[in-house]
Image 1 (cartoon, rainbow, N blue to C red):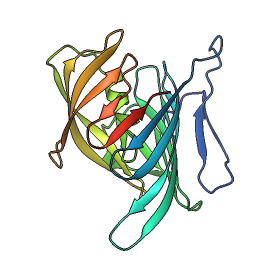
Image 2 (image 1 turned 90 degrees about the vertical axis):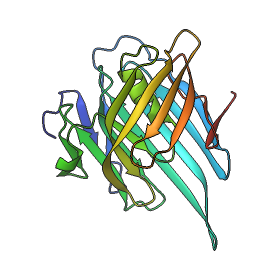
Image 3 (image 1 turned 60 degrees about the vertical axis):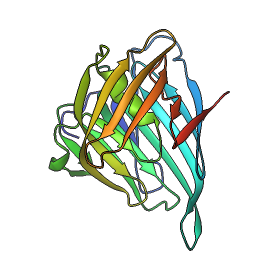
Amino acid sequence: MVGAPDDLVLWGSGSGVRTMGFIRSCFVGVPMKRHIVWELVDGVSTEHLTVEFDPVRADGVVIGVAEDEETNEPFRVRYRVQCDDSGTVRGVEIGGLDKDSGIELEHDGEGNWIKNGKPVPELADCRDVDIAVTPFTNTIPIRRLDWKSGESETISVVYLDVSAMTAKAVEQQYTCLEPVGSDSGMFQYESLESGFTAELPVDSDGVVEDYPGVFRRVEL
């Protein structure tokens, strides 16, 4: 990995896709973990996310049924995301039911990405990721950027399609409707590629509470 920090380690998972994680040797005490559950509004899918903050360490599992006109196929996706202290994504791992396929992304924090061991120059300048099956990755730029009400930011994001296990750079825009406070905040998300927009209420950690028409959070 280009410019990898000393505390970034890779270890074998036995599945053909390596598992990525950071060991924070100087961390004092046990980090607080949150458990979050989302379900698909129109379809069969549930996610359980375990996440720590400062820096972000996320571990999510999504299970469900992919419905189309002819068949209903079960799916299972596990993803892990690691950010550094600035909120920049430094590592991503995604795996599905097929243990021989998956995505592993490494990022040096300066725009240089490696996908499954090979440099991916077309992802240069991306600092965030968007994993299609989860609302969690909206949290990453919401937490990383310093917001004031009414401000908009256009960002380059690595979009990860878990059905095809592909990665590409896309542009997205976030607008702060209400900065994150002690209880909540509100942001507008827009895909500049498709034109899709959504207003996203978030909690005090910047985690999406409701993704209108797509995901809803389950009260725990």
